[in-house]
Image (cartoon, rainbow, N blue to C red):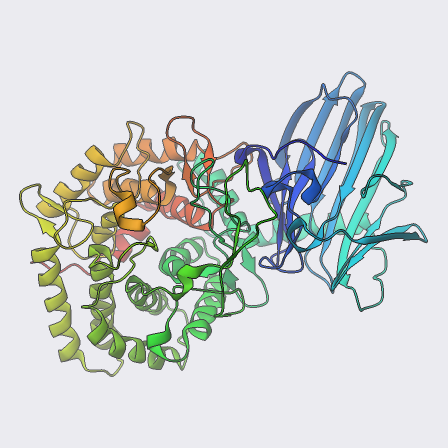
Amino acid sequence: MQRRLPLPIEDYALIGDTQTAALVGRDGSIDWLCLPRFDSAACFAALLGNGDNGYWRIAPENPDTRITRRYLPGTLVLETTFTTNDGTVRMLDLMPPRGRDPDLVRVVEGVDGRVPMQMDLVIRFDYGSAVPWVTQSEGATQAIAGPDCLHLFTPIPTRGEGLSTVAQFTVGPGDRVPFALVWSPSHQPAPQPIDVGDAVDDTIAWWQEWIGRTTHRDPTSTARTALVERSLITLKALTYGPTGGIVAAPTTSLPERLGGVRNWDYRFCWLRDATFTLYSLMMAGHVAEAIAWRDWLLRAVAGDPEGLQIMYGVAGERRLTEFELDHLPGYLGAKPVRVGNAASTQLQLDVYGEIADALHNTRRVGIPPDEQGWQVELALLEFLEGAWREPDEGIWEVRGPRRDFTHSKVMAWVAFDRAVQAVEHFGHDGPVDSWRRLRAEVHAEICEKGFDTDRNTFTQFYGSQQLDAALLMAPLVGFLPASDPRIVGTVAAIERELASSDGLVRRYSDDTSADVDGLPSGEGAFLPCSFWLADNYALAGRWGEAKTLFEQLAGYANDVGLLSEEVDPVSGRLLGNFPQAFSHVALLNTAHNLALGPDGPASHRSCSVIKS
């Protein structure tokens, strides 16, 4: 049974078990699910194609239905309410904390009236390409293909129809109809049915206990507190529990421009997110998760510093070979659909600074040091002493020529600055005189070659006149104070040339993007950069503007509080992989800046200021 094209990105919600995740549409259809890990092949891939590529929909038969939805308070349990002329039903969607195998639970509850319901289950393993062999026995439906097996447990009779499994049933007041879909390796014995009632109760309790550990709540704004809570839960959901790695998003190839080719696989862990993520977790009191992320970071980067990657798999895997899935038409026709990420092999000098800054901040907040952490940092610094002068692909992973990106050089300065502080303030041993010299040399070169005196702004790369929103990081990492005229000029130039009237910030100009990243121009505004502009306002004491911009940006979250990577500034539609950890991390840090003022993460991180 086929179904229409996928929904707008903002019409999806997330459920997950901290090892993988699913996207649930407003219409009751699960259109994306990878099992058993975030980066496994999808068994529901209608998000990147159509109904033939796999989905699981449960909804009223009556198409004239009013739909509302929410997360149960303090949880990742999704409640969708369908109201029809026949009556009202609620559906709970959740993934219980992982036992032996991943489970996906759906419960349909009658509220009033008698509502005819329809279930359509289309399983297509290997990213929507493999039709399974389906059998029924002892009240369960089993679908198997190659290494994968899915088991559907429900008391509702099901039948096969057109390479799908379907069912019709009616619910009345007080009726509770459970469905459990359980994955297992195909060579192992079938799992036992789970107790759906216990699974719901345990999952609610698990999430509420976790969010209850949050130590910081904003007493000045209940709205910000709710946004912070939802972003923390989302960040936890994107954490791969066994290792502590945090994926950038649970999806691949959701486009940064509708119909375009800027479609990337984000189901991996980026080093560029390290310091921001640590701040967002530590400021909220989730120290165990911060330590797990730090430990994942150290394991992933261990080895030859020259071979440092910008991203790794959830367990630290290095081989993330990129290839295209030609059988999938892409989200609303946006091709290609990519698996893996070729940017993993790029040289991006900024990640050396991100690692040094992340480890520096774990020391500052008193996280117990890792015995090998300083040795790893020493090796990275030794490599950077020679490599910082090289051109690279930069923070945005451009697929054009390497350049001397100003942001990359700023983050090289950060690496040497944090190394100096490790000796001066934390008693570590190292060639501090050499690091001081390098810190000063890098700083002077950036101010000479990366600054346009005629326009009073730092530029995207040496010798260019182009802007880059990554330059907003310079005051946030302490390269120069927010009051420095060069920073004031840079912020003003970005406001003028890259920001819309409501504060949405593009990464760089559409007019020049093809020359820089080697791709056709045109993409949405980048939400993390937009939050960085608010952070700059906070650092500069422009608190009213910071608060206004934060509220405007938070308004782009969908009805259940989720953000993607980008926003179309014209339509307001969400673009890019969803939900995006980096966007939620940026929201968390800006919210903490507004709540804590001079004690917020922007001021905290930027305290390493030297004058030039």
